Image (tube, rainbow, N blue to C red):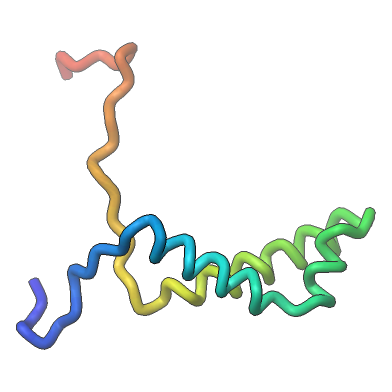
Length: 79
């Protein structure tokens, strides 16, 4: 667990998450945006990875948590 000065857990609203994503998209360089649309699949993939890295960096100082995974209705629960 964290200390009293530890900012976690901070729960973001959907609007706050949307804001972080929009700001990240705005920070993607135009050259990367153009490269995501080229026919060269390797170049487009590298550009997409660069774009994702820019957006992902917006979440570096946040903990990301989700509810527990819901089991499949087809999964054998007797184990």
